[in-house]
Amino acid sequence: MSALLALVAIRLGSLGWLQAHGMSALTVAIVLGIFLGNTLYPYFAAQGGEGIAFSKQTLLRAGVILYGLRLTLHDIGQVGVAGVLIDALLLSSTFALAHFLGTRFFGLDRSTSMLIGAGNAICGAAAVMATEPLVRAKSEQVTVAISTVVVFGTVAIFVYPALYELNLHWQLIPAGTRAFGIYAGSTIHEVAQVFAAGRSISPETANTAVITKMVRVMMLAPFLIGLSGWLARDTTRVATASGSGGGRKLTIPWFAFAFVAVVVINSFAALPKSFVGSAIDLDTFLLAMAMGALGLTTHLSAIRKAGVKPLLLGAILFAWLIGGGALINVLVEGWVH
Image (tube, rainbow, N blue to C red):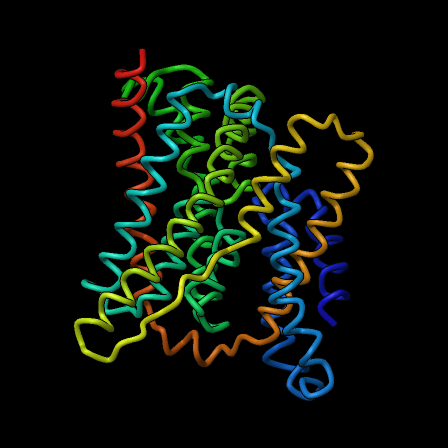
């Protein structure tokens, strides 16, 4: 069933209207999955449960690995030291802010806070799905996190062209399509949303924004590795302090290392364009299957139970990405140049 959902989502995701609004096949897949998961799927869950679990776990990891074919090390050189540093600072600050506010201020569980932070800090739904195995989240927690990316990422498509026009007059960040492209790519959630917002300004802005965004996506691997180590260390410390012993073992995200390996291979192996194109199509299909499977196992009652707090956290992170992102862009560009 997840394969059928993926095919339909990819077909719908290719429609011009949805593309213009930054709605990728992955977003469509989870929306369709949620609809069927709360209407028809419960009647067939017993027969398709194993396949859905396989899609959410094994196929997800395979999709993350193949995602590396969209990137090359050359991408880093195109945005320069400033672009890489801006991406790194925004990733770390956004995730830290999400974790702090989510757990301390809004009273959300740690898994939900981390998933929201990962989705806003790195690359939207793909980052949420890649982080899910490490934090051992439930389907409802993943869906809540993705919903914040969809809502505020869609808003960004319309906000950023307006910000570009305002910046022409106010000069809050360095003027020019390249500088604004770095700003957009380092602060907007999904790749599709980055492209849609950048294209509304100019082709040059879109190109720079997408490259900056892909460098940000490349940081997914070190993020996962660092998060895994931090979770293991933090849990062990708590267990030792409480006298319960044991603690959590280090979960090594091997698929993150494979992701980096694919990026390196794609950078130096001169793979045929036809092969890379087909592999990227397969990757989109696998990720869409994983998203569809996630939607099928998501219960709206659990999302309603989560309440408005996740969206409020997403709104604060969105404001930080716009305001704090502008400040970081200005400071880094001034320091580098």
